[in-house]
Image 1 (cartoon, rainbow, N blue to C red):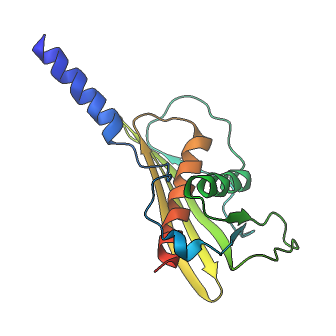
Image 2 (cartoon, rainbow, N blue to C red; image 1 turned 60 degrees about the vertical axis):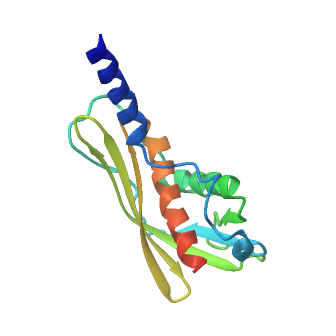
Image 3 (tube, rainbow, N blue to C red; image 1 turned 90 degrees about the vertical axis):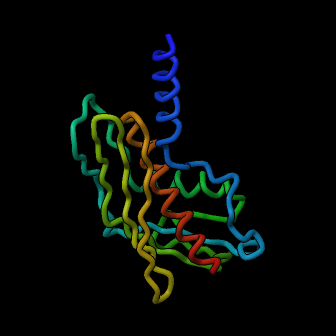
Length: 168
């Protein structure tokens, strides 16, 4: 009986302990720095269009549209952080209130599976003016999960890392 309780406790701990943070409502960003700024993201046309998968996996997944998923990740992060983040949808679209224009080139997306977890890794080169910031977004969970949801969470961690860099 004691052994079963210990195993159940360890299982629950591992389920919650091995997931990566994906909700940034409680964040450590400097709200004053971003107070009167608008950050506008656009996805570079050279970005990857598919997700690589490695390791043992089962099931079929409907492949998400990478650009659409990127846009959703920016919108979710804006809501959670309460920072004015926008997406530039079209090449010619004028964004007059932009203080920071970010050209994001997604260079790699890999979904890595092992026996007990799955990790979505997104590598993005953010170009702002002449500077390039290479950021890696990670999202790990104890099951495969949804390809789109995991990608959104992975992209959000990369965007958040960029915002932390910008406020320095």
